[in-house]
Structure formats: C-alpha cells, structure tokens
Amino acid sequence: MRIRLAIAYDGAPFAGWQSQAGGNTVQDTVESALARIAQSPVRLHGAGRTDAGVHALAQVAHFDTPEDSRMGLVEWRRALNGILPPTVRVLRAAKAAADFHARFDAKGKVYSYDIWTGGVLPPHLFRRAWHMPQPLDPEALRGTLRMFVGRHDFRPFAANRGAHVADTVRRIKGIRVAHSGQLLRLTFEGDGFLYKMVRMLAGAGVRVAIGRESHAAIREILDGAGKWTHVAPADGLYLVRVRY
Image (cartoon, rainbow, N blue to C red; front, top):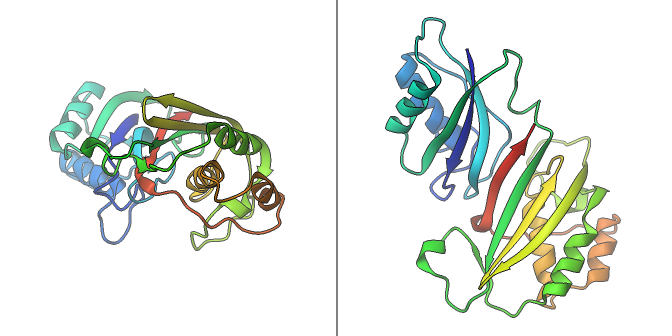
C-alpha cells in the first residue's frame, strides 16, 4: 500500500527536510522511524525541500508499506508519532493511488513568512519569526510584493544550490499581506519556488518597506538587470500547504 502523509515540523533543530550525510534532517528522522516500525529500510519521498530552520505546517510525503504489513492507516500514524520527536508530527495518513508521487504530482505550494514588528521579540516566537522592529511602510511592502505576482523569470531572486536549474520561470498566483497586532504575515502561493526564492522576495519587500531599497531598483532586478542578494532569515518561513 502506498501511504500519503501530512507532516508538520518545527524546522529549528533540523538541517532541512532532505536526507544528507549528517542525518540531522526531517526526512532522515521520519525514515528512521519508519524503518523501526517496518523492521527494514523504507524510502520516504517528500513534496519538496525545506531548508535548515524552515518550518512546515503540512509537508506531504509518501512511502510504500512492506508487502507483509497488516497495519492500517491509523496504526501507521500512531506508531510514527510514538517514535518521532515532539518537533515532528504526522497529522494525517491516507491511502494513495499506486502511481501517486508527492513531488511530481504537486501542482502548487503555499508558503507564509512571519515578521514580528514589535520592539521586543516574545520568547515563543524565537526562531519562528523574523524580528524587524524598524518602522515598516505597509503600502511600500504591498506594492513591492505585488510586482512579483504573475509569471516571471525569478533567476535574480534565487540562490545557487550547486546544481544547474534549466527553467527558472515560475508563476506566483498571489501574495497576501496581513497584520495581526505586531505580527505581519506574508503568504505566497505559486506553482513552484526556486531555492531561497520566498526568503529573497520577502527580503526585497521588507528592504523597500524600511526605506533601504527602491521599488524601481527591485523592478530592474526582476527584469534581469542584476542579482538580489538579501535573504530573509529562515526563522519566519513556513510551508503551509502543497496543492494537488
């Protein structure tokens, strides 16, 4: 049986989602739990990478159960949550089609980015929001982020992961800016995002909003005249949803 999981995690203690040699990733942690339950290696496939320090409210992943397994969906979820650290939780487990793939079937993703604008960062938001106590111009922020909506070549707003990316054109369906007291939340929805792209777009919007960059300069960079280098911290970024 192929099982689709919705996984939430606090990214602060981890070196990102994707498995790596050090083993301190969310994928490695969940695969280790799966192997303990199945008593054999189990490969987990995620909808996409999140970087070190980035959180997820509903990362999607799938795996195939061993042929001799008699465990149902509820048993798999309970068993995983009984082994996983409290920073990782399987929210839902559902039967998937035999040809379902968490990554290749994904049609879009939603990310949010949290910014705390108060003078003092509450301790429960430590490593969960970008502390930006300087005065922000909300209209300048909205105007800059609105520029990114639509289909663009976002190469100037992507970091180099070390592997060549042939197609850097992405479509952003919408960017919302919401205030709740001193918490500012940016929500990005698109068909896909490049490496560190959301953090770079958030960084660009904030730099204009605090008067350290101009709207026109960001427009020129988006049009290909230059490269953006200011990356917002990982702390405030959350993978909210994967759309299928």
